[in-house]
Image: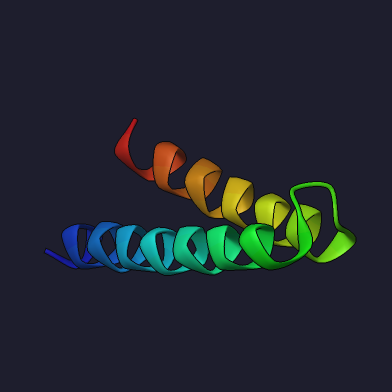
Length: 54
C-alpha cells in the first residue's frame, strides 16, 4: 500500500513539474536556463518513478 502511495505522489509531482516547465517555456523559451533546470528536475522525477514501477 505504501508503494502505491509513493507512486501516486510521484505521478502528482511529475504532473505539477510538467505544467510548471511548460509555463516557463512559454514565457522564456525552451532553451532558457530556468526551463532547462526544470526539465532536468522533471527527468529526475520520471526516472525515480520508473525505478519504482519496474
